Image (cartoon, rainbow, N blue to C red):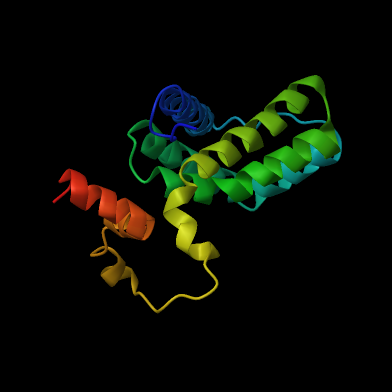
Length: 171
């Protein structure tokens, strides 16, 4: 199977990043420019109105705007997706199980699916989180480590190294 950075996966991830980033930017900008809080029927609407009353709704919308800009500019994409994930889960839960109107049944799962797939596409950068034993590595020291060189060192089995030595590649 081809890697995530080769076609067609590369273009699927690009499309997903741009679509999700534009969706976040539009959602945030729409609130910032008008102050409009959508009407949602029932308990979900009461929840959103309560968020607005305690000034959390504007925080979420400003955050969505900034995260959308980050995704569209291809900067800190994984960090933006991780920051947006709790909001995506909340939107999914409220729209799918609490409100469940046709519009919400599209937007809730769509939000969670896009965010989850984007995190999955960039999750290779989090691979060390799933290793059972790690030596301490401070954040400022982590920037010195070249992830891809470490990855290639791990993949070089003795058979591969012998083949490289015989062919004269990558010296």
